[in-house]
Image (cartoon, rainbow, N blue to C red; front, side, top):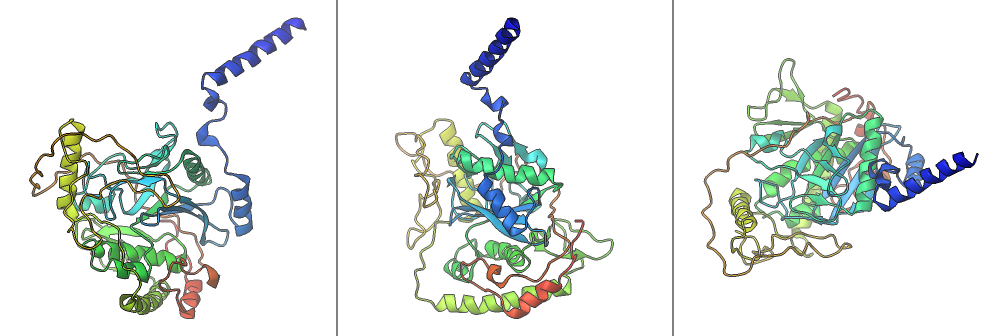
Length: 416
């Protein structure tokens, strides 16, 4: 008996010593931590299973990451929203390795992209470059959502936040979801915001993203995403035998009529709100945005010189005009309004070097592995709760016809 007690004491001591040496993660792994009880209670109240499919949205200007989860009625509802701790670059897409830009677009995350052993606490690769990015010659590697609140082209969260975000994905995968959709936007794509950025050089790209944004607003389901003619297309069903090729002409395709009717009604209301916003005297202040592939090339060259220890300017180069709200030299990591200040990275001292020549083309670099673009669309789209229609950020709320049409949309893209 005394010997058994002695062995037990040795085992307890070993566990305690292991904890002191930092191996408590082996006892309670950070990747296996459960969601807070408060969130689980909210799920139950909203009619969500713990392992139901999810979708995420990111908004740069607002500094927010949203987690949406499928309810038992088939539609998605917002279950959690987090202040992004840091993201780097400006508004606008990522073009090339080293341009310090956090991506914008529609991305797919599968189980293989989850990293429970990340040096940034926990992480998942967002899948950049996707089909659209590759078709447009864009490249870059290791673009993540991760912890540690430090960013150089990624979306960085606090460790506590990323544990919860990781848990949402983990539980959805265990429930059978093969991949979830992440939508990354420059800002909430309301009429007021689109009017503010009407003259931005990225406006055509953002208008393309907005179509996918609007389809989600109408259906509260992740849109079906394809790429053809080097552009995104949403909720299109290709004719028999046809397929979507990212660099080829778009094949004959249709949108199911109930869905198209609902979308068109939403757009009619949006156009009215947009016209009002264009006439509004409200503040037109905007955030800095990247000036296309040429500026991206300049920043990438600056990053390489800086990494080699060369004497470079304290801030990355910019092609933005010095007048208005688009000030040059503002390519820094933004923090959300409620988070700490941006990263204070050490800068090389000394005189600056001349701006490099902009290459005519940017060669493709190593591409991150991407899964097939999919969406876990539910089988049924029931009639909506009018109070949940729209994002509450201005823009079209949608007339009653949209709500009636949405209720008629059933099993449009099941099994994709």
